[in-house]
Length: 198
Image 1 (cartoon, one colour):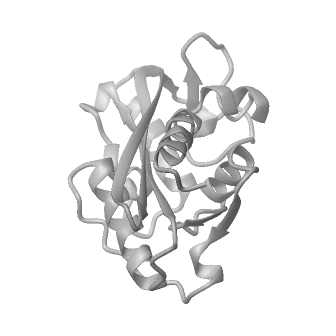
Image 2: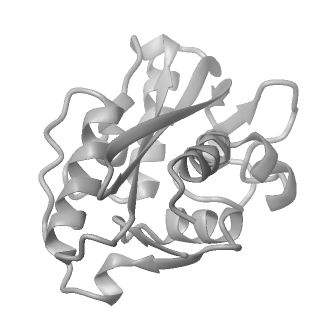
């Protein structure tokens, strides 16, 4: 079964392909030209739906199944920021490193070394049956220093609940059991089976 991914984020593509290795996972831009999608929703769910529906329409194939992820981190000390703006926290053209450094800088500006935080992943699936969305969460804390070079995004400053290492230090095997995206993908797989898409 083919699943089209409505993303070009290499980190997300790698994680989804690893977790969904029993499906044929295709990045949509390998099939059609990549195009700009305006993510102007107010929630992770809204933005995931906007992306999956835009790519489904562009593929122009009623049999296509498209999944799109919208995810980010919410920091308690920053009143839930960056939230849906996680990928552009330091500016619309900011790199992942610049976004991460902004969180570190903000923690230090408040004279705190850590804060409770959580990741959210909303994954939308669009097919001939319409669009549905599942969610996954991962709780823990952010710290004011980078540790480890694994993962991507904010992983080197996020320590999952129950652990002393950051996601940048933990193995992929451990991370795959914990991550917000893996939690959502497990629900998504059940949804796919329930929709009789296989």
